[in-house]
Length: 80
Image 1 (tube, one colour):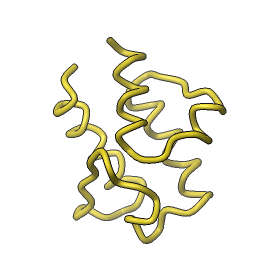
Image 2: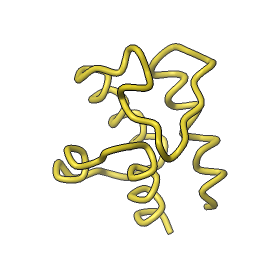
Image 3: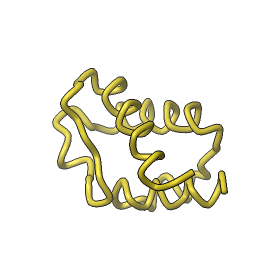
Image 4: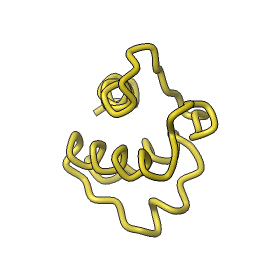
C-alpha cells in the first residue's frame, strides 16, 4: 500500500472518530491540531486505526508516537 492510499483510509478513520468531515491529517499532524483529541479519544483512535488496518500497536509504540507520520510509518512497516 502506498503512503497516499494509507492516508486516504486514515483520514476517513480520523473523520469518523472525531465526527468531523473536515479533518485531513498529514505527517506533521499532532493531537494539538485536532480540538477534540484528548486521552480518551486517543484510545478510541488507536483502536479504530488498528481495526481499519488489521494491525496491533504495542504500548511502547502508542506512547512514543509524536505525530501521525510516525503512526503511518508503523502501519506501513506492519502491512508491507
